[in-house]
Amino acid sequence: MPSPLSLIPEHPGIHAGITLFLKRDDLLHPTIQGNKWRKLEPVIRLMQQEQQHGILTFGGPFSNHIHAVAAAGKAYRFPTVAIIRGLSADFSNPTMSYAHSCGMQLIPVTKQDYDAGMESAVLRQIIEPFAGYFHLPEGGATVEAIKSCAVIATEIIAQTPQAVHENRFVALPAGTGTTAAGVIGGLGRSGKAIVFPAAPHGVSERIIQSQIATVFSDDIPDFEFRTDFIFGEFASFYPELIEFVRVFLSQTGILLDPIYTAKMMWGVFEMLEHGIFPDGSVITAVHTGGLQGWDGFRQRFGVDIYQSSL
Image 1 (spheres, rainbow, N blue to C red):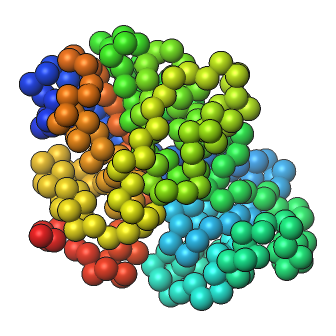
Image 2: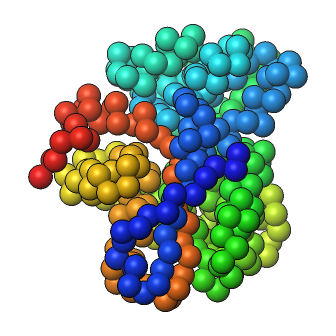
């Protein structure tokens, strides 16, 4: 760290003197990519100090978070356990297969018990033997993770000295809102963040504001929460979005993930196309990793990102 910036030379705002960068957090670690590394780093330090016996966490059967925690356990030699949402979860899918190969113990529960959390007697009984483990929420959403993600903003400010707060914009996708809260709090009044949620549920402007207030202060910096680029559900298949990723890859050599950064960059390009950013703006979009998601898309939808889908 800091992760580098890649200049995106071709975009709809080029004639307005707008500069577009992609912050390559996907390059931070070969398997614990992007914001997952930022979130897990404080927990990994606890494991190295032997303050906890291992990590117990939660997620869906295609979760980037589960993939990253499993990779961290293998790389840094501590045990990992994951409570998986849904008894019908396919444990042979690429994400679950990888997690299992890393030594992660996978425990499926019903969606009802999963959603009930600690109010579920079944879940409490499953978790009881792991009292000495660090219980990591879904997506790695902790106070420590928010603080760690704030460093992203600090790095961007240092890496874009040509920008001032009026024309510095930071674009980032959101799942739980943890990364967004950290970046917004870290950015403060030195620019404006634009948040692109990946799903119509799970995160909101209010949730992000609450996370910021918990770590920083009640003086919430201004940010924009764009819900118009969600593309239906969390991991839906849209050929147009896949084709956008393919073209972006051919022009830049950078692969976006199909669920988070693809929607974010589509949104940024649409906003540039419609002249929403002021002339001379400096925009930094954050690549939060998640590239393992393509394995799931390949299995579920037969997507070959290197072949046109239209």
